[in-house]
Length: 231
Image (cartoon, rainbow, N blue to C red; front, side, top):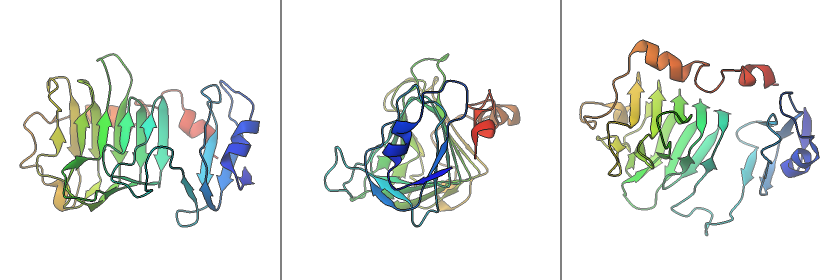
C-alpha cells in the first residue's frame, strides 16, 4: 500500500493487470484532481486514510462546485465502503453492478424538488447491473425519490438502510417505462422516510432467497474479487 499526494500519479504507474491484484493506493489529504483509470487496469484498490481528511474532487462539468446537479457515472463492477456521496439530481447513475455498503447519500438539492438519488440504466433482462445499498444513510435537503428508471430494466435495492424524511412517500419513479420490468425494492430499512405504506404499487416484494442474491457475493463478487483483492 503506497501513500500518495496524487492518486493519478500512482494509478498511472501501475501495470495493466487482468487477473492479479494491483498495488493499493492510500490518499490522506484533500485532492483536487481528475482520476482516470483505464479499463485494462482492473484491480486497483483505492483507500482513504479516513473520512474526514480524504477528499477527492473535480469539477469538469458543473459550476459552482455545490451546484444542484452533481453526477457520478459508473459502468462495470464496483464496491464502495464507508463513502460520502452527494449531489442533487441522479447523482448515482449508470449501468454498473455496484454495491454501496455503509455509505452516506447526501442530497444537496437547492430547491424542494422532487429529485432522485439514483438513475440506473439496465437495458435488458440478461444484462448485468444494479445498484445495491446496504446499511447506508440517506440524508440532506429537498424531496428525493429513491430512484428513477433510466431504462426499463432499471434495478435498485435498499437493504437495512436509514432513510430520513426527505424521501418522498411514493419512493420510486418509473419515468414512463414499463414497470413490469423494473426491479426496485427495499427491506428492513428504518427512519421517517422508510414507511412503505404509500410506495408505488409496482415496487417489487422480494423473498429471502432473492435478497440473498443481491446482498450476497452472487451479485457482483461471483469470482471473489472483493474478498481476494481487499488490502
